[in-house]
View 1: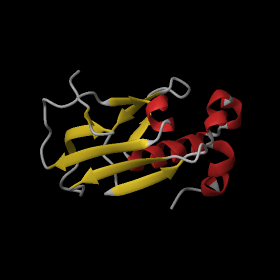
View 2 (view 1 turned 45 degrees about the horizontal axis):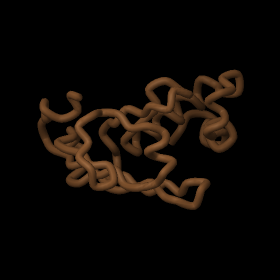
View 3 (view 1 turned 180 degrees about the horizontal axis):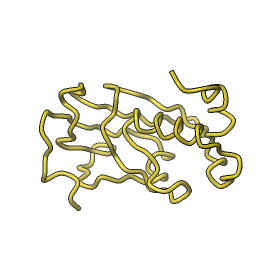
View 4 (view 1 turned 60 degrees about the vertical axis):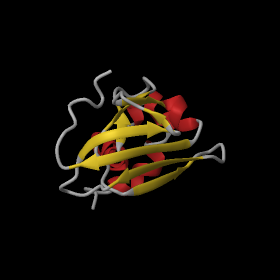
Length: 127
């Protein structure tokens, strides 16, 4: 559960346009937005930069319905509390060895497929 009335304000304060209007974002709605992004497996490095860091999703699969009618799906194979480390990743079937994706990648639709494991793969995400 989100603190206070944060959940009621998410749709109003956490739209793509709100990132360019920081005065409209309260501290609690920023935290809630970050939490939701992080739970999906990625989050804005710096709001408005268009770069998202890839992290450990809380779900095996999540699909985002985009305004352009496309979808962006995050699949986290073997995701669990124990298997919280990314072993490998692909973006739309192409090997991804960086820990970042762009807003353009998400907006174009497609699939981010993460294979999760019990221990960090120190070879992944180093480029």
